Length: 240
Image 1 (cartoon, rainbow, N blue to C red):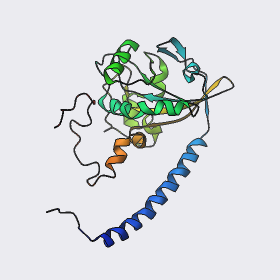
Image 2: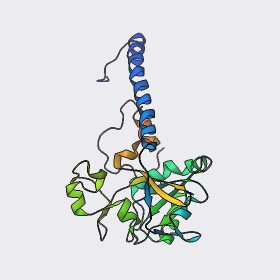
Image 3: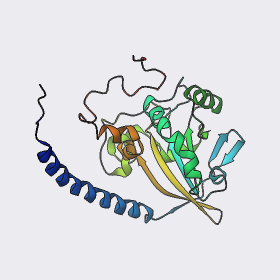
C-alpha cells in the first residue's frame, strides 16, 4: 500500500490546476531570466588563448567556425585522467544531438578539456559522440574560466563568482594549479573581437540535462542517494 496521499480524479485535477498556475509563473520568470542573461555586459577578451583541434591549433575566435556565438562546455578531463568525468559524460549524452540545431541558430558548440587531444577523441569514439572537442592543454583558458585554486575555493573568490563559500564543493580531481568544476561559458564574436558574455557552473547547468527535468516530473523525483549514478552510458549493467 502506498504511503503517498491518494485522491479522486476530481481532487487530482483541482490540485493540478493550482500547480499549473505556479508552473506558468515559473515559465514567465525563466523567460525573464533569459532576457536578463542576454543583457549582461560583455567583457572583451584580449588574451591569446590557444587550443588543439582536429584541424590544428586555433585561437578562441577561430572556434566560432564562422558563426557569431560560441558555447564552451568545460568538460572535466584532466591530463592524467584515463576517462572523462562521469557527470560530464552524462552531460555529453544530452548535448550531442543539440549541436546541429544550435549551428542553424548561429551558435557553435564545443567541449574543452585539459587532456591531450588524442585522448579526448578516443574517448569521444568510445562514447559515440560527434560534438567538436578541443584541448586547452596547459594554457590559461581553464584557469580563467573553470579552474579554481584551493584558496579561491575556501574564500569563494573564484567559484560562483564569489557569491558564497563552497569549501564542501565536489570538484574534479586536483590539478597542479587548482581544481576544476564543470560548467558552460558563452562568447560572442563581433567585428573580429571576442567577448565573454555568460558562465554557469554546477547546478547552474541543471536545466541543460534533460534527464534531471524528466526525473523532476517522475512520481519520486530525483530521489536520494547518488552513489554509482549517473554512470558513463556504457557502464550500466544491462537490464532484462
